[in-house]
Length: 90
Image 1 (cartoon, rainbow, N blue to C red):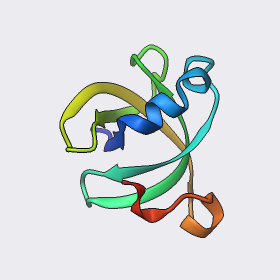
Image 2 (cartoon, rainbow, N blue to C red):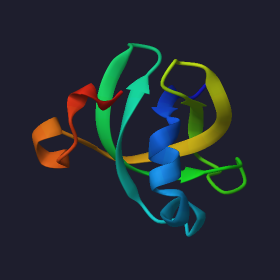
Image 3 (cartoon, rainbow, N blue to C red):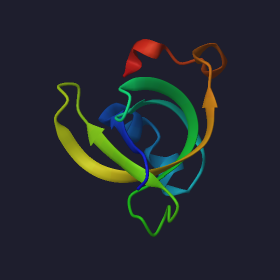
């Protein structure tokens, strides 16, 4: 069984074009097994066919309500200082 992650809808919207092209994006996700926030470089897809070796990625709004399901392949975990992303964004 793979990992389960969560991401804010705003990231998906922000990187919509890059995700559609299959490009890597840098964003903050939450590991649902540990509830830990992680800054990562990853590929995201709308279907398992796009990311066959990917893990579940639940898309949520600012209230934590589920807005969709996607898939993610984490390429690299980053220190928040490396990522230029605030740890408070998830």
